[in-house]
Image (cartoon, rainbow, N blue to C red; front, side, top):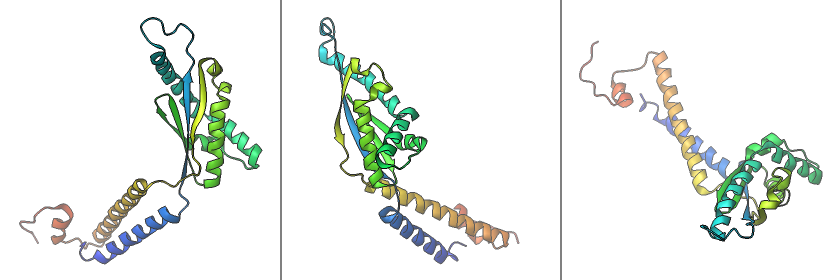
Length: 216
């Protein structure tokens, strides 16, 4: 059965491959912009006395603060602030909920990386700059005691948003090819089933079961 329709299968898979390649190269896929801030906890005088030294106390405290800042970034209140500032500077409106859903975080030792996935490269660059600035300078609006417990500084900022890497594009293409293959085989099987054109010789191909006998 599948051998009878091999040309259809080849055409569908070739079209899917060509379309996937074109989409990943020229399509309006999301751009990725990143920013990273360093968190340096403020340790009170005398904290070095006793069991833990100053740097160990600073590292431990910074980890907790980084977790708190991650919660701030993922909240819709923070996204609302960025959206308002973007509108003030550019005149264009951004949906805060959409922005909040496009922001993600990747915490590291004493640092927090903010990742923005956005369809427009220019907007992505502007938004990530506003996000990093707000995180470094205005976290107190959402974390009132941040100035008392830590210093925050931008240490990395995307100079230009980038498209997803080769690995992501390859996975996307492979997933689309697999989906197309499953779909076209299912269509062929159901088409022949409803037309009463399924034959015993097709069982081996479809199910991998050797036919030992047939009752006509």
